[in-house]
Picture 1: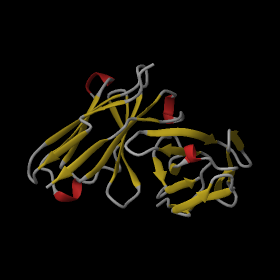
Picture 2: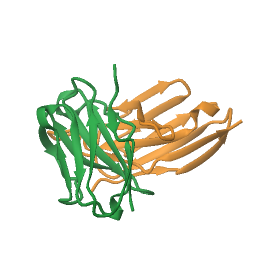
Picture 3: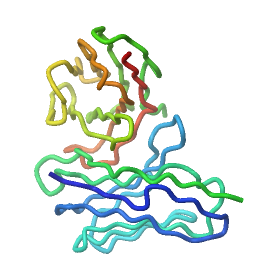
Length: 115
Length: 115
């Protein structure tokens, strides 16, 4: 059974600081997603990482994937209050087979950015 | 373009009652997914429709849960009879690309509380 673990689960940051959220997963997959969720809202897709070494950046967020280490990172640069949210990584458990789409989620990282 | 919508946003029912949740995917998306997040746990996959067919229902917890997608458009998830442990947030998602390879776009969820 695929397991996905995020750490930290809670992250309190000051504005302007940098930090990284880690996502480890237990079996081979080459399809990993990062989502953001604001309280009471839907999950918003941030990044799709599809190959080893993939790196994507959007604003102050940068995501990377190392399929050999089964590790993805979400790096936050110079955090601002608007980044406060819950961040999830999700791995496609069926990736590589004939059917994609069964996502296995990490526990989520609750990020709070303080002024 | 309208996103994934879910109805109701909240539902409070008593143990033993029946509840039906509805999901309207993004127009043109053949793939539709149901997920659930029980309090304090990860978001868990329930099932995946391709048009009106169940592609993968490996996450359905038991036979009290019935999902349908008649006509390949909207989907319903019925819980009958509801138990206390069914409380949680039920998310629906849809994606466009064949084989479930595309990014999944999530709805805001239905918050179900079984008393």
